[in-house]
Image 1 (cartoon, rainbow, N blue to C red):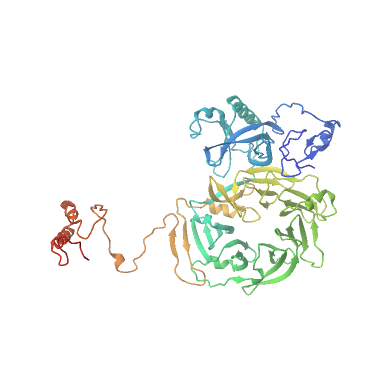
Image 2: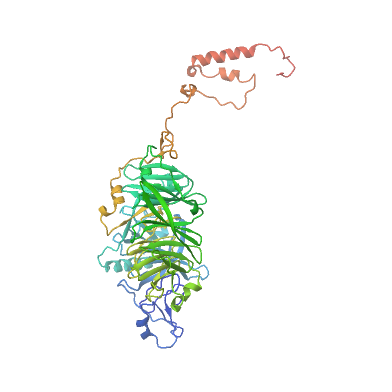
Length: 624
């Protein structure tokens, strides 16, 4: 396997060798590059001599392989009025892949996919544009531009669109014709796995600017953690209520079996426990105290799960290299936590999770499996250090993103920031094929059997059973997304605004996704409100204010505030007025527009200024 520094195509199937590292195989003699899956069939093309020039190939219009490729221009961030930037585009395997120009190599694309558009999308369209579609483009460039669009959200009226400009009109017509020809040969199947649903955007909920985490509370309600406390959002009546005052809620999770909330908050994060019943009582009558675990001060991540053996809920806390496991018990309505295990990792913990009775912890270039039933057993290190085919993982400091159990206690998928590898429970490689990312992911989510890779400019969906790249959504994810390992809640940029999205699984019915039912029953044209309550157990009355209109009538605090001040009827601006100046100006105000009381006051003031002053002489300056 070889890591290619520039964009390379397979000489057997003509498709792009996508991935960040180890994209394909390479022959040092004939310099033939191909996919690992195409290596056995590509051996017939290797004659042991140097291939100086690739034989010309006709465009593959079947959808597999490269149908068309070349340099185009796309709008810069901010729209057409900001200008155009050069990008390399290739159409292969029903996908349009856009690559930036390599800054170190002129006219050479890099290997990281900047934008991806799936032409197999049911809402995909490719057509020319009119002057009304590109109002900021110069008239001479309009015949060179065509438009691409695909489904982005569940709302078909808000698709993802992208403008592409070619060198000349003939080249543009060639791109449009080939794209539509390949599109017409795609099987009539719905390739979508997830459809994002908009819960709130920045205009509806200003809390998104300071929101750090989110979790599903129940049907139609969410938990939102922010810099100043914990909130609940009701999707039906569009109301948001502040339920707890605390500093910097980094993460919140619900343990459904025990009806318990696990909160990580504070400048030096600490784990805090709160019964779910305390959130439901919005009138402040519940005086339930928050349970703090002082030993967890300074943690940077945690995980909640259950064991099939005892059925108890577990809390796994990671503090640098140390991992502590707590068990929850409920005795006479009171929650208790008991420390049952403590492990030490070779490096700082980067990911933590559990599979039934097995705890999995990820660190730099590896994972460890701990048996929760028998603490005397040594941990299993993945991948195995004796496997030479996986030695490159130990030689490179790869960040551990997630470990996925593909087959129960037998096969695992180890996800790193550069690629994913399949191993057995012993740590040895189980498959030759590796999972290649289109762009380096920041986080990983998993909803069986689909893996969601959250990159900087898109979200890719892979089938872990076949390593197939099944869907891509051109959404720019913000820091902290996704908010759970299932990937159901994410904070992304939609049309330049922070938007809280819910990933709807198209395979499931709405009855199996309670939060979708709450969204569908949402009342329209209702302004989002916040009930700001004090921290418990205070019983003071809460204040209600609207986000859209912060100015509301407040009751007067004293007698003077009840007096209404009338608006001025006439006003003359005077730049400077001394003690004896301005009397004539005030008297010259039109009498018809003056109030009678004001006229009497000004007349008396003018008569007073005419009286002689005892301390003033005719040739001396006034003395005051």
